[in-house]
Image (cartoon, rainbow, N blue to C red; front, side):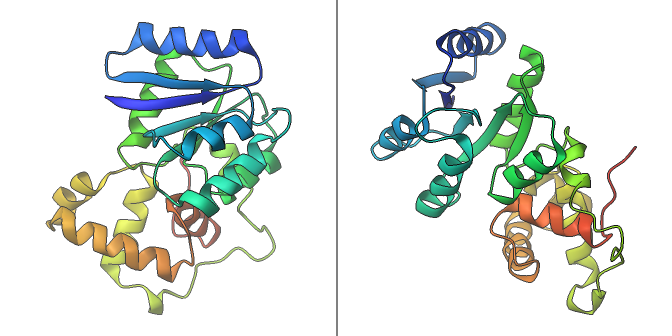
Length: 214
């Protein structure tokens, strides 16, 4: 079972999300529901979920600050999916730079929500919102990164990560073990100066290693 918690300041929205998840999945369970970031952080002190479904606009401690504290305090111990009403490019890029594993708009269907939770739980980045990533481009300076610091295998793995492939899938495609892929992923995080996979994806897009399909 994938254990998740929900953080949204609207009680009706929290209940609606919980109901949608329970109706559309048998492998996802909601183990906590909170109205602000302070309640979320208090809960995380004694219970570790698999994923936090986090709203941005909350009182007392909003989603931005909550996400920042989560990554500083807990690292990548669990996944964070932002469930947001914002469509601003700048807001969504900031969310990813703070360490979110994905952004999903609140207008999404229940099926999209549950499938995204599963996708992120399996160590993939949520790329169904390319708007956020397009802001990683600097139109005046965009160019291929000097590839001398990356070998061919590393570039291939980085591109496959951007395509939402997990370690096992990448291993099969490249004829390597999943353990080797995980080691390469650690190396890539160091070479891209990223603190999580979202950072690696932004690096790949910014430097022309990966282009989001139209």
